[in-house]
Length: 282
View 1 (cartoon, rainbow, N blue to C red):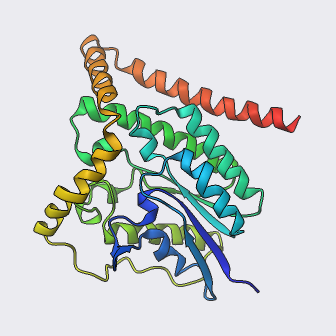
View 2 (cartoon, rainbow, N blue to C red):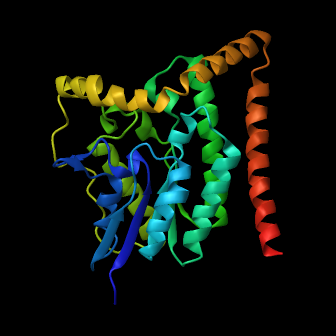
């Protein structure tokens, strides 16, 4: 009997940023892999920092399919929300392609909805709300498609752990070791409940002491700030326009229109995916 094969797709969250191990990162997926089975587990992490849904479709999915995984995690979308090119229709189409490709091969999907980066960074309301609206749109797409493809889905956007600073690294966007362990523990519980994880659950307690405040601030001032800047540079002019739009609607008392517009876009994106599926079936 061959070893259980677990392949992880995604961005810096799945790559393990925030949970250092030697000269690299470990992260929740590697922690989870250790508790999937009592026997051998072959774990491959294809996640890359900065990846968007496009990279997952074009690069990570073909590489992952070659590995013939039993279990594949697809946790992606935050970087899409941080780009001026954000398009919920494209996100829905790409996620649908990825989910369909792996489930067609018999793999079990692991997915998660995620907190919005604006609130995590502590941005002012007029700047945070447009990002929150985008992340809610992505989460809604992930919810619907996860249900459609029978994924094991983790609700990681509204849990109490988000507000616990002990779970997060200095950049406030990536979990620290404790946060990565919390994700691994929660995923393991869902898999065990479904009879898909038979190994011991990962420990929720960190192996290493938390970084000192000075070390965290140094990392944030160097690598952390550069990480955020690289991903938000092309968004800033658009984000300022979105913030101005938020203020105008707030003054007029018509802010609900922005939420309705976003909800309509999500519905159209999901309907478009359904139309494509029906056309393909014919």
